[in-house]
Structures are given as structure tokens and as C-alpha cells.
Image (tube, rainbow, N blue to C red; front, top):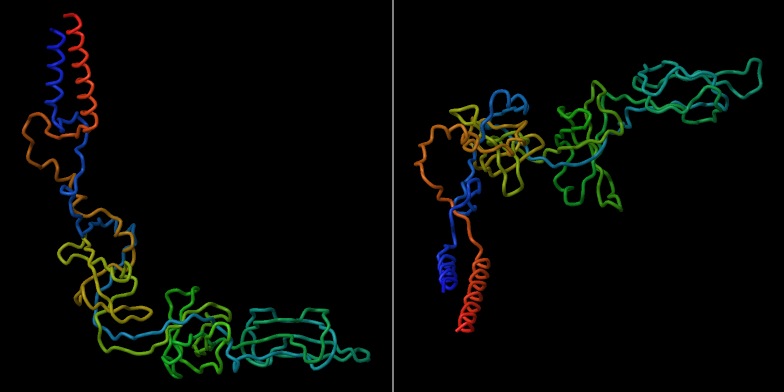
Length: 364
């Protein structure tokens, strides 16, 4: 009888356990969608953090904005600004006075050739540079043999060069002779070289279905060298006034673009602002929606800002000591008791009750 009483008490105790019970100290409350906080759209930076990120700012401003067509190409020698040095006789190179990359003046001796004709001594010919420029190719070595009209040197005046791009069929109609072009090269990423469309090619390349476009570019310091990879921004149109920011200020993917705008009342805070863009060129992009003239936006170091915690989260720990003290008492956090575990326990207890009942009847 006492055993039956203990079993019955155990069944009642198990049945009275709720599906949630007080959590043990140190166990976190189960997360829920309802309790998730919405992240702030602002981040905060100290002066030291701004310096470490290399943060740079620019104002959104009304400015003329050109529409451009981007074309990939390379720098080439202008045909009317290059000349070759060749030999008029067959012979042997006696001396070479310049190397590739040297600057030369028109009339400056560059190579001497000894003739193969009989004589004592054999006759010699001295050849000079046909123009002021830079030696860009050399095929003459002392002691080397020379044939008539053999190419010994190529000399180019690099104060003007050509930027040769490739237009695909869908781009050709937008390009015309005389259009302005801004030429950029990786060697000078912060410099734009001004050029003009000089001519278009006569026939499309059969393999790439592209047409050459030749752009004359001023190069007074000879910074542009033949063979350099170039990007041509051909100006196809212009707007008198558009609200624009530097292209580097705009982050994100098409349809989800944004900038980081400095808060007007607190220069330590930056707000992530969605924007809608319009026309653009190789340097500027029009902002159709999201900014006003005079708004300051981050143009360098802004990529890292999107990975910083929101300003509200950054201050949460600082604000915690000032919060209202909690009322002493047991923790009310709960953890869930698995339903399967309760069902197994009840089944075991039921089996024990049955066995106890059978044993009692056997004794009687």
C-alpha cells in the first residue's frame, strides 16, 4: 500500500510539471523574433577612428555632368610623330650611341655602319635621328651585320600619343569625330588626360566585332607610354546642372545603392542613406533621390563603415549602469521542457503502476 501511495504521488508530481520551468542561473532565454531589435542606420566614429579609416568627405553639389561611354584600349604611337633609322648600305655596325628609352634630338648621331665594299679603310656611314623624341625600339648591336633598308631604330615624339579603343557595334552610333575624351591609365590613377576623337577605323574586326577609335591625347611630360592599358571615357552628352557626388561615395548593388552621410548636428555620426542615381560619368554620379545640396558624404574609407555596429548598440553597455535596478526575486526566465521527455516519463510511471497493481493482486 505504501508503494502504491509513493507511485501515485510521483505520477501527480510529473503531471504537474509545466512545459516551461525556471531556467538555471547562467542559461540564456530562448531567442524570439518578437524580441529582435531593429538595427540603427547610424554609426559613430571617434577622431582616431576617422584617421585610421582614412575617411575623406565631399559635398553633394549642383554641377555640370557629362554622360560618358567607357571604352577599353591602349596607348599607341601617333604615326605622324615617329620615324625609323635604316641603313642605305650593307655592312657591319661599328658603334651605337643610344639605347632604348633615351631621349634624342633631331640630327643627333645614333649609329655608325661600316660598308662591305672594298676599300682601305672601308667607307663608313653615320646615321642620325630624324626627329626629337625617345628611342622606343632598337635593332642595332655593335658588330652586327646590316642589310640595306634594315630597321635599326624607331624614334617617337611622345608629346602627343594616340589612345586606341575598341567600339562594339552597339556603341558606334554614339561616337563622332571631335568628341572630348578623358583617358585614364593604371600608372596614374588620379590623373585624367584630355583627348579628342580623331578618327574611327574603316572596318570592324571579324573576331571581336569591334571598330577602332583613335583619340589624340596631349602628353607634354611623356607620362603616357606606348603599350599602356587605358580606359577611354568618351563624352557623349552633358547636363547643365545635376546634384552629384563622386562615384566612390556610392556603395551597394543596383537597386540597393546607399551613401554614408555625415550628421549635420554631430560630425562623429554617419547615417546610411539609400539613394537613387541618374546619369554618371567616369568621376561623378547624379543623385536623383536621397540627398540635398550641401550634404557631406564619405568618399574614402566608407566601405568599412558598413561593417561597424550601429550607434545604438555601441552605447548599450555604457547606458546599462544608469538603468533602473531590477526588483530582487527569483529569475523568471524559462526554458522549454521537451514534450517527448515528458511523454516517456508518464509512460514509465504508468507501467510501474500496472506492475504494482498486479503484484498486490498476487499477494491477495
